[in-house]
Length: 387
Ligand code: NAD
Image 1 (cartoon, rainbow, N blue to C red):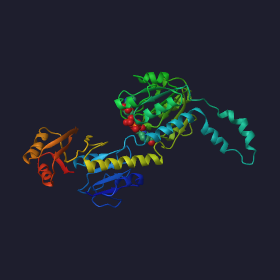
Image 2: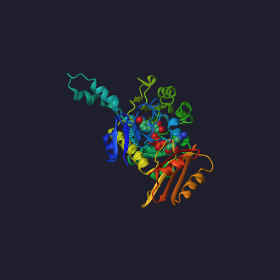
Image 3: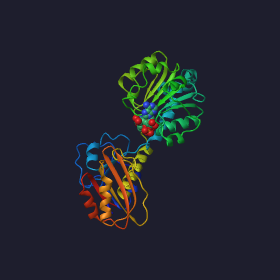
Image 4: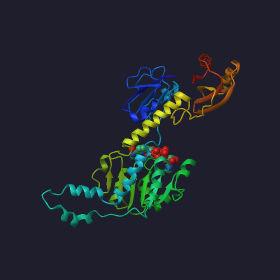
């Protein structure tokens, strides 16, 4: 089977080259089977009738009209965790930026008069930029997902004590964490123990402004706060007041806003968290693999609008994938079509998510397109596709 892929935005070649010979890939593709996109706004874009999948090389999907995609049976993917290492590395760098006045020191050196003999001036003034070490200090990590868990493990390697808080930690997440990370059950324990706090939770109604006057009051004097998650997690005016009263000694943020500029103790970073060459490549590789797996095998991994569903292929079987509205009696209606055609079901997976259900069905022998048409003629079927 041949597939046509459209790219919107520049997508890393390291990712696109994975499509291989059975794929035609271009920015101009007409009526594609799938689209790979970064930030292109797709809300006003008409979709061709062949379109089956959209993969966003990145995490956020607000440039994609999800409701319209779900209605039309288009599976939308994203690439969670693909940029985690990039964010982790800049968080580690920020632990040092918050501890030693590297930024102030460099700015000062750059301001020196080139006509002067610099070396003795440097030696005389360097004590103005002295700092502390992170070894032996306690890091509080709020949110132990893809990024938080990597930060926690690496901070242990750097000789820190780590307390981690995540009430929704998955089993895989817990297994990945170093057993030296002390998992605590309340945020108050993080606030009480941490010399440094780094935040790695999504911005939700429940997490908005989580670092505020009340939470900062529970922290150690001179605590350092790192925010590479979202600006809205930290209340700017509360943290500025806390810096002025020396409660907070440093705030490193990837989300600069006007009121934070020029405040001594704030290190504003221009949203560099995921800005690495490798992170873009990782996202593209993951997006391409997700699309291939879906078009070739019907397996859904990391979808944001369809249920995730995967089943390994077996030799000498054919596969049909079916999406339907999540209403009663659908499995019975669908499988009766197989029985009527004398087809033997070898394996079947049914998963649902909200109003959508998705089935992967393996049968002995071949599936012909007329079976898909007969299934599609049933009420509440979104699509049936033979692979
Ligand atoms: P993730 O989904 O893997 O991890 C988030 C973790 O937060 C999960 O383990 C979840 O259980 C936990 N969590 C949710 N609510 C919580 C709460 N109230 N208290 C404690 N833990 C809670 O996500 P990730 O890939 O680690 O990314 C984390 C955040 O980093 C993202 O939501 C995003 O906002 C941000 N991010 C920023 C950049 C950047 O460029 N600066 C890049 C990527 C991600």
